[in-house]
Length: 102
Image (cartoon, rainbow, N blue to C red; front, top):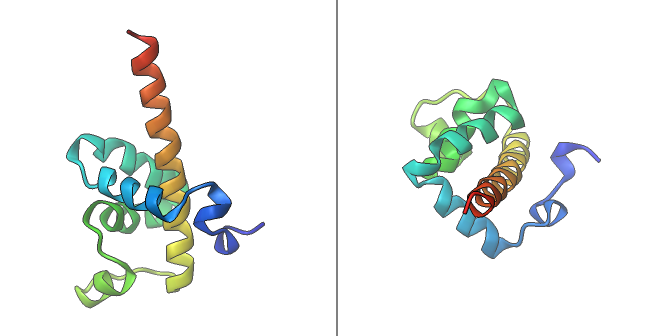
């Protein structure tokens, strides 16, 4: 299945969970994980994906502010969903490390 066709539910993420993940992505304590998620999702778009996930700006909002994004909107959101999934996995891994270290 192509990245473009995968929806949040294909990644096992509900709308409510996505909202919570976006909230967590905006927390400065999670910036390194968000950056890694964006880079793993698509290295060429990592800066735009990072900005979107941490600030809540969407494709059109960033374009209106003069940000050039070299792909179509639907492709951008596909990589954003993928980055959100990777972020979810990294958060789970960090939590597992913390509980194992206790």
